[in-house]
Image: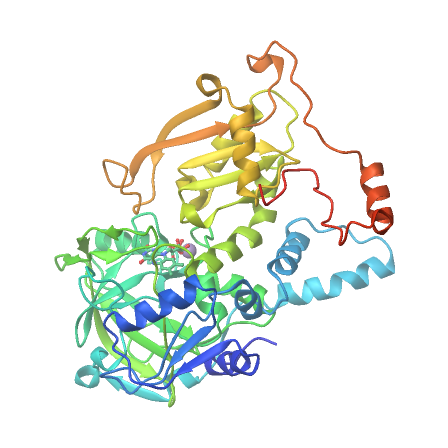
Length: 497
Ligand SMILES: Cc1cc2nc3c(=O)[nH]c(=O)nc-3n(C[C@H](O)[C@H](O)[C@H](O)COP(=O)(O)O)c2cc1C
Ligand SMILES: [Mn+2]
């Protein structure tokens, strides 16, 4: 069953010993961030700060900050279980007999739960403040890093509509607090919310916008999922939670928002108004994003539960909470990547690559230059297009073992032949690109080379023990009397190298 509230999820975490309550008063300026960073680096629990200076609301952070908590929020025991469910609908087996058809029932039930449902009332509107009553400074909004331009709402889901098609979008974009009823809205130019804004700008129409905070812990995840433009993130969440997302109508604008949210901030952007300076902000990359020009969001209503919890996050050098959200995306989207690039066996977006700097990809190579074909396909695949450095290895290489990947880069790459450079759109956050959003990418083909790839001499076989001997030694291990079996080395390199 999906979670009815953030509070319910936190209660379960607490019962499982995976939440720490901080009762002493803390400062929202940097103190919350330093505590959270230490806990993130130590792979620690979710945190609930009960008293944040200047606010009456408790603050939750690092809620999705472990693989276990991320999977729990998705209602599964591990991420691969959800990936399997997605694989089932991406590539359904055609049912033959009665038993096969029965097996399809849960799959169909999940599909039925996809469309969101509009309900008449929701706990997110137990308290409604409009007009002059609105005061965002009552929220425990944090400053994350010393050179940040101010306080930022960091874990909100931004609800907008495409003014031409009516399609809903939900994206996680941060807001810098400007006054009691205004914020700056930081969306990257490639993201759907910004595209909606540009359509409003062209038409000269006001853009209604709502920020949702809290509720089912799946909501912050859905807002970060890299779905294609025009695909409603609420549909995806409906599938993930196995129940429709319940939405209520906003009080002051024509949008719907999650009924179970803790806070909803309603308002609009006037595209005729001049942009304002937003940032700097300490970002996912471990560097400050430079100040830039973004639209102003005017708040028309602040609604909330009667006992709301304010969720937030910090980003910075990994590991942080967002690493686990990124890992969930990596696993959940693998079946889709395989659908479009069938030779992909597995991939890994290492934390040290902060989502866009590195992608390690294992492929089942059948023909010459196939690694280059895969690189091109990835550079054309949704937000994977931002991958700055792609390393392609053969199918037996464990892409989650970075030593093993680099071993094959070292061993198999003839640099003048196997490195590809190209140019294209880059992530806004890539500060090494001399111009924002435009830059170079590199592909490294670390696969075994065919003669047609400029390798006329014979390629040696990699040394791998035969499965028969591996099994035999495992079975006989105790007979050798040398203590506990460290386990077979496997096909690749030993992780401890
Ligand atoms: C913690 C966190 C914070 C994020 N902050 C921003 C942000 O401020 N601006 C932005 O454009 N994207 C941000 N992102 C990335 C987007 O949420 C993500 O790319 C998402 O897929 C965009 O959705 P869209 O394709 O519907 O626009 C953030 C992601 C995470 C995990
Ligand atoms: Mn989207």
